[in-house]
Image 1 (cartoon, helix red, strand yellow):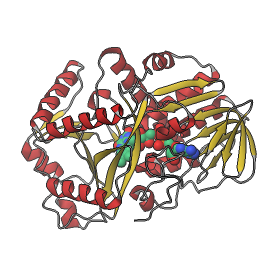
Image 2 (image 1 turned 45 degrees about the vertical axis):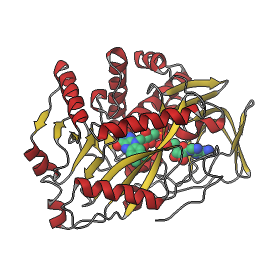
Image 3 (image 1 turned 30 degrees about the horizontal axis):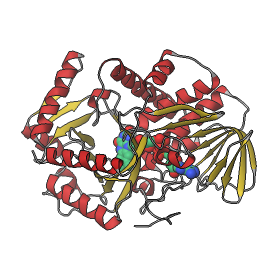
Length: 441
Ligand SMILES: Cc1cc2nc3c(=O)[nH]c(=O)nc-3n(C[C@H](O)[C@H](O)[C@H](O)COP(=O)(O)OP(=O)(O)OC[C@H]3O[C@@H](n4cnc5c(N)ncnc54)[C@H](O)[C@@H]3O)c2cc1C
């Protein structure tokens, strides 16, 4: 596994996240549709500077370009294209909030979340088809599975909510789970029609490489500091960008810029991708050529059988710091062999971590932070659709394009206060041990 250099000591406030390992998705992607890295050189002047070229930043840039034709927009990322959390994700795009791993709201707030997810899906569908972005778009639904008694109860609760909304699904017997997914580890399961699966690195590369010409994208260009003023000055190594408006779409590093530190915290989750498998091994992973499954339990595993003949396994969390690669490898292998003991071996060609910003109540950080400074953060572990839709809405709120969805977004973006350390760490450990206990039930 290749590693990138870390900018400052682990655990201290950092301007950006430098990961130990590269993303497998980014490594297996072919040259076509790639956003080629271009490092910022020299000083620049722009109307808008967006920091962070993940789903939030890419959507904000695209919509700002539509709303401000001819204005210069600069979009910056610290990492090579596709190496941020966007290109490290598992590629599940679930468009109903009830079916997400951490679905906690009901009533109008849940309806708003579903509306956001569907808006994100609609816009991504339009953008990818309009620009011919080939990101392995599979509109094939997904499995939701549980491995514990507690999970089985939660799955029943989910099905009752789907029944009340008239949403269809297919309940699976243990035999079905074995036949379709090749695992005996999951004791309960259901197939849900709502989910598009994509190759996430191809998607983010495609989104960045098809931005209008007025958007200049610079990668491997970390913003070290922002001097607020009129205009603001962004310091990128020895270079400066002067911008009238700054938009921070930096995910976990928002607190580094002075915002959201008492509202969001950072967790890492981990994924592994196998080498290409032969026909015998592929057949052991169920009948279909490709499928995806998410767990009911928050500490469960997300799995995908891929058309590229590989298998993807995501599991595990750590608070604040990324686990060292050897530890990630052990966690992933243990869980993979528990779920799929029949495989010839349990090696991963790539394994990697990715950083997520989480709020206590699951609300995003959205909107104006200071004069001509805006932020969008707190994906709460699943942000492909959400951060895309919110990025589009953030651009619209800057321009003053009103809509019912924007009004609801402002109403429901109220992340609650998180106590500082050491209470924060104590709270996180308490929650993690509660979830681990539930996994043993
Ligand atoms: C292993 C894993 C699996 C996941 N699976 C899914 C899934 O299946 N479905 C789903 O919806 N979500 C999934 N997610 C979550 C998803 O990746 C995030 O929700 C999403 O990427 C958030 O988008 P974002 O634009 O807010 O942040 P990011 O994608 O993290 O983008 C922020 C960008 O800001 C850049 N940045 C930060 N600081 C600076 C700085 N100082 N200067 C310049 N640039 C900076 C970062 O390098 C980064 O690229 C997964 C995440 C991980 C890690």
